[in-house]
Length: 370
Image 1 (cartoon, rainbow, N blue to C red):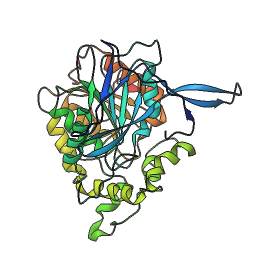
Image 2 (image 1 turned 135 degrees about the horizontal axis):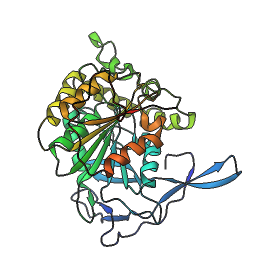
Image 3 (image 1 turned 30 degrees about the vertical axis):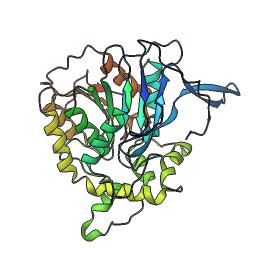
Image 4 (image 1 turned 90 degrees about the vertical axis):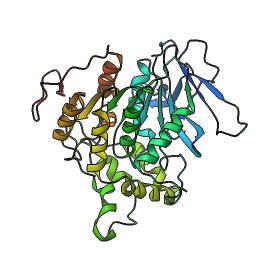
């Protein structure tokens, strides 16, 4: 497992009838047996408590693998603690370009504590998942969208009522591909939560991604700077141990393949204007999943105004967390988790948002951190 602490995972077993679980299937055409993982087998990290001077167990996630669409996937699996009733819908969290599933580790813990089963994949070319060369994998929105569907197809959700997931996305490109998947497959996605991600024409790429589109190919071959990508948009520092994990794919044995995938993602997906317009068009149609935006209002990459306009155009609702940066799930996972939990557990009637105005936030929509 890619954490600094040791993992104390319970033994997996077949999910009981009526329980919430999933089945991870092997690559098509192989004889690899299916694996059923019981959602009640919680995973813990053992960490040192400076107050008590003792090692303590802290709820965490296991790192699992499966094969889908000709790729090997790594993903984090987080389940509730023993005795906590599981919610009926699995939450799937998709990271942005250049990052990895670990970015959601703190948020997943908050959701797990409330009974949500959480799955966060390393998208193709990222983390510990396969990194095919750009000549054999396009790394554009269509490729990511199709691959995400293949991944979900290998997770046979065994819920009492539905096979729909709840989706959480953040960041650039891969998140937009997941949003397009959700809009095209409302029978598979019940609700969508958008953390800070490009949503309008006023949003631009941060330099670690934008460098590759400089004129005359001046940025071609630039290093993949995961440190700047993860850190510079935030309001608060990311600890050294966590940052080491963010950077790990770009300094290890697969660093060249990871860098190539990073650049290909930044160049093959098209302009931010085109990708955001594709998402706007997709969610402007009737029958798409209900959407809640949970926004860090101090984002150094993405301004608020395009987000408000997007919410008006797509009839999405929103929460704004003041003094929180580009990664609210990293800055304040507990508060972020509360907003997400409230939305996922609500009865589901999202208002018309006639009161939304650019630069004006209603008291009910705003979040003022003391």
